[in-house]
Amino acid sequence: MHLDVKDLRNFYYRSTLGRAAQKVIRDQMLEIWPSANGQSVLGFGFAAPLLRPYLKDARRVTCLMPGPQGVMPWPAKMPNVSVLCEETHWPVETGHVDKLVLMHGLETSEWPAAVFEEAYRVLGPGGRALFIVPNRAGLWSRNDRTPFGYGRPYTLGQLDEQLKLWGFRPEHSRTALYQPPSERRFWRKTASFWEKLGRSVPFIAGGGVLMVEVTKQIPAPTRPGLGQRVKTPISILKAPPDAVPV
Image (cartoon, rainbow, N blue to C red):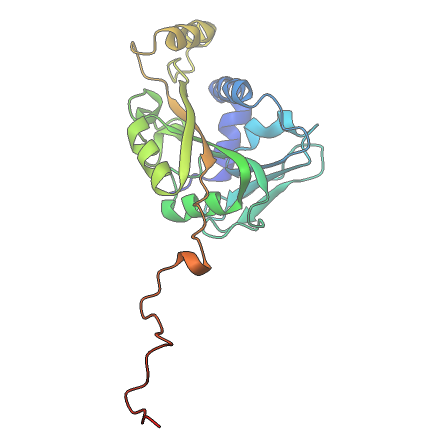
C-alpha cells in the first residue's frame, strides 16, 4: 500500500532525518549517474527528491506519482513536471526514456509485475534504470517512522531475480543509509561517520536501502524467411494422385 504524498513530503522536506536520507541517496545516485545532459529522465513513485540535479541539463525531467499515493507540484518555484498516473499504465511513450529512477514505487505497489513491465516498456535502447528499495537486512525497513518501513523489503538476491525475470540486466549494486533511522542529536551529528564506516566495511551492518542499476535486455530477433523450417514442403515434381497418363 502506497504512503500518502503528504507524509512523504513531510519526511523528505520537513524532517532532519528525511533531509539526511535524501542527501545520502542522491549523492550515491550522482556517483552512478553524474549527469543527464540532453537525456530524458523519468522518476516513478516518490523520486522527486533525487532528480533536482538533472533539471538544468536534461532534455526532459518528469516525475510520475501513482494514484493511490497522490501527487504534489514539483519542483517548487519552477514549472511543474510531476504527473499523477495509474501505476499499471504510465503516460510515457514506449522506448523514450534514457534514465529511470524508482523510489517508493515498487515495494509499496499492489501490482509490482505491472511496475516492472512499464519500466521495461518506457526504457529506450541503451537506457538505464535505478531501482531503490528497502533492504531487508537493514535497520530502516524495521522502523515504520520512515517511508522505508512500509511495503515489502528486498534482499539483493530477490531483487536481482525479479529484475532478470522481467528482462533487465543488473549492472551495478550498492547499499546506502548506514546511519540509524533516529532523530536523536547524537546520531544526527555522527551520521557521516556511520555512512563512511558502512561503505568501507559493509558486513558490519546492512545499509537501509538497496540501489541496483540495470540496463534493458532486448531479445534477438528471430530469423524470418528461409531460416524457418518448412514443416510441409511442396513436392512440385511429384504427380498428383488422380493424374491420368496421356
